[in-house]
Length: 143
Image (cartoon, rainbow, N blue to C red; front, side):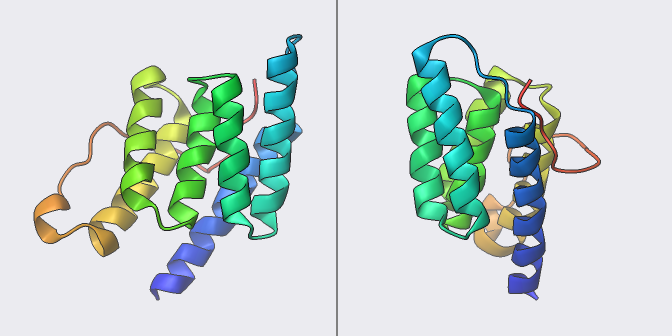
């Protein structure tokens, strides 16, 4: 059941990443263009199940254009896929500090919070993990 649930969540995450790439807008700076290329490559590798490579690409994009909610969202998703749950928790929280009203971040964080508290965190740590919200799906565009 756990693998089936994680598999469904991963598919939903890929939909988020697809929407991100589809709506990508490349700014004029070379760093922003390189970050956009890293995001696109990260999406492609994640789609093929190469989550370590995806994480590296998303982290590089974050180095080039720091504190972007979409990038932090994708880093957190890749951290989850790589089993780096505590890091994912911190990354979601960082993203929500920067953009507390970002629907995709809030939605993915709520899903992560449910998974983390049910399957990963010891009972004493499975309480509220911070800010969150409701959402209809995982889609997040790049605007």
